[in-house]
Image (cartoon, rainbow, N blue to C red):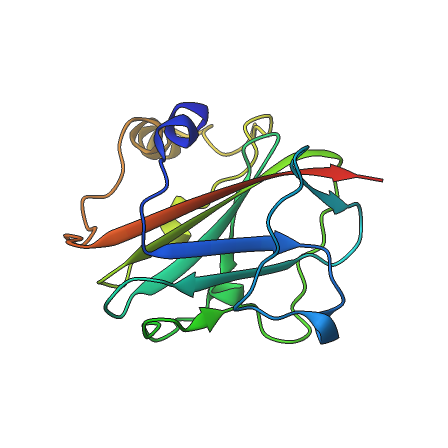
Length: 174
């Protein structure tokens, strides 16, 4: 995961905003520049996340949150929804009441991806790297699946022609 995060370079066509702000005051189409020390989020306080399609054509947008233990969670589309492609200039944010609330101190990274074809972004989710399910691979059949899961991914991903990426690194503080 760390190697992947270091290779994800921003690609034009997508802007990503992550900030603590009252939802009533949040404008998903505008984001203030991050302070020189970097963007911070407050522990246990709602964080607003949005992306804006800055590409010339429609794009499907996804935002993943990556915590300090490399747990990867899909943030947008919210709760596994399948959203239509965003038109140029259109923002996307979680629906009202589906706030993102940082629960741990430390680094919290957000990776936004947009493509001209829909992706199964849930396939990118993973549990924290310090979590081991001791019961998961005990039988011979389960062990075969566990070994396969550790060495390769499904090849059923679409061929993406046009894509964009944005990364926001935040620090969660008290």
